[in-house]
Amino acid sequence: MGDKLRIRSGDRAGQRGIAVGEDSGQIIVALMTGEELVLARDQMTNFSLAARRAWKVMPKRAGRPKAQGERKTMVSLRLEHDVKRRLSLAAEMGLIRTREDAVNGWLRECLDRLFSQEGVPELSVQTGGRVAIGLKEMDRG
Image (cartoon, rainbow, N blue to C red; front, side):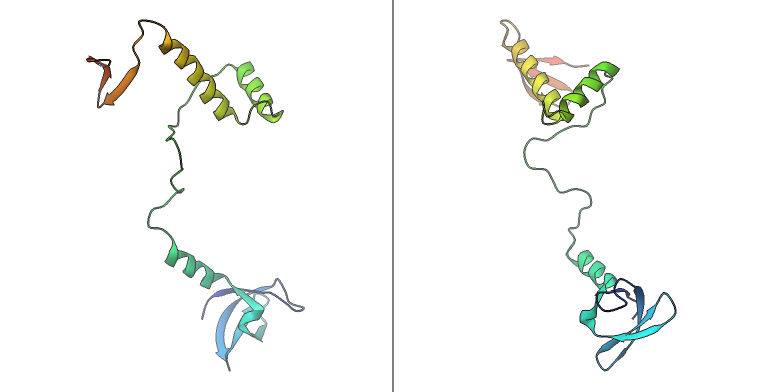
């Protein structure tokens, strides 16, 4: 009793009410208008029951499910207005899939070119506040 309901069928379809009792296996529903109806369980949607079921099977951790693939980090960049406008326009026109994918791809290409130059060591391992470069460690301080 006390569950919030919505009538599914008949001339009162769509109206909402609260379960206030039971009579011979049917539910007594108090409508928001003050009227009471006796309805079969299959003539209504029980919002409260649906919510209870969802809570029962809900995973223990909150938030979005873990994304598949590479981890991403949220960053904030200051872009010139024109650059941001053109980036958004390129996404709207379908020239790029998303702004995020485009920026990640372009940065990766430029970094690959930069690190492929002779004499520039590739960063290989990060541990705490130190970065291992080749065989020697440098303090990032």
